[in-house]
Length: 313
Image (cartoon, rainbow, N blue to C red; front, side, top):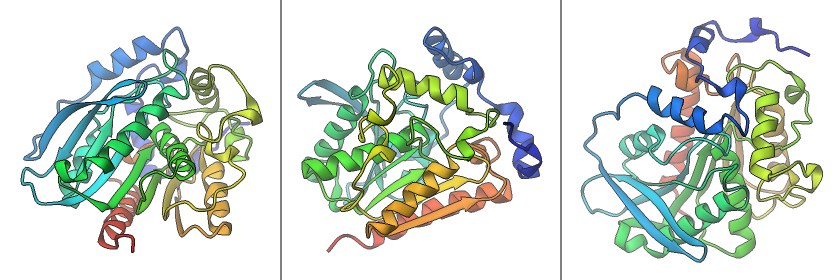
């Protein structure tokens, strides 16, 4: 079954020629070359007055690299643990989203350079993220972060990693969080939904996604996948922090995201869900000036700003 492209917003439809090279052919054999192509095609870093610092932290399983974005002053600010996107197999901590959050919200962002599949399948990446979150909370004073205003966020595969991380953090009794910010998160390894059944979604389609899941999970465990890898596998979603989820109506992940939000609400988790008509996966990045992209961006920026303004009691 094919997606009807006539439902895609005309302004973001023009951005499809900017689709990252190689994603449609992403496999275990091509993933390294896709990473290289993306690195070569990446624009130069934007000019900024932020302080940008690389740190290595020591965890039980080894060292984890993080990149910290924040204002140059040492005044205590809210903190965001940011998990970059890339379907669990591509991407780095040098993510422009991290810079934008730090600049626009005057916060400190710890962006995790977690280990990628297939070289490092689950749970390597989430172990890195959890170690980074604990380190961030334990070193809040050193980092000039308010420990009462820490959020976790991620986009696409990073949103899926963030969702699993928040479940793991709950179960391990880790740091308290003011928000989980899930931007069109990749949370269902089966895509067994109406929106997940379409074969030709732009940017990130069903076949590509299932291959990425196979690399991340090092196989196809189906319903037996860990809840910390695929958050939709969780039987209990209670006791989680306030949540903001946004997704496009023409995104492969739409229905799994909507269903996850519904379950969070039923479990008593304060949850906001925003679905944007005509938006495909990542369209806000390819055509940021489109009206629907601006609404999407404004929604998650406001959600994080509000969470930082109302620290936990």
